[in-house]
Length: 287
Image (cartoon, rainbow, N blue to C red):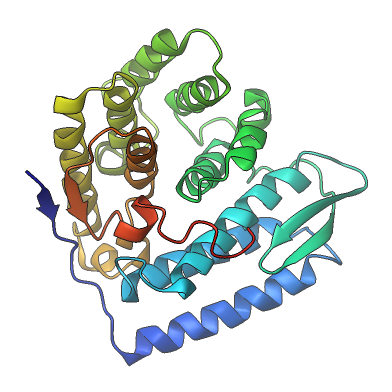
């Protein structure tokens, strides 16, 4: 039996279409400047992710090529962000959009931290970019540490879990147990309680059911994750109109892992766009 989780209402009128066009034009301008300087690479990544969310507002099933292109650009920008901040000299070859660009190294940036890494990794998973997933997972944890007080310690355990899983390193069960325990609201103190419960913790719990190949538990865990996502993004009027609530990025990525691993995904929702989950656009154009 398939469970349907409705997405909360988001504005989809003419103004939104105009906003998407303007945002894409601005992103193209930002990308065009990268060959001269990558000092704003984190801003490019942010804009690309925002464009992806905006496209998903008006195309909730990701049925249009433009939406897939927006997701791919966000993935490419995330990978490029961590590539150029990982070296301090020379240049790095990165494809963003239709071009392979030679981007100057920028060296460490405080914004290239665990939170941004999770977004970049989820995007690589959704786009089924295995080489980029591997490159991200080879980044040392210490490089992803943000200034003290920015993140709870659990986030580094969580990144370690994902890197361990993808690179097939030992200790996955112990690391996942630590991530689950450290993300408990009674332990994690920095992240706001509603953010922790509604957005940050659910992908960890969902991943737990995925790695155990828990056929009976995965669907209910995904259903709960999407309901918590909706609850978080409808808590007040400002959140309800925020385009970032259009996709449940972490749950979508874990659902993609499950789908590719032939674990039943018996939940349908515009929070996990059908054509992203089912990789309908894969191979449509070079990524």
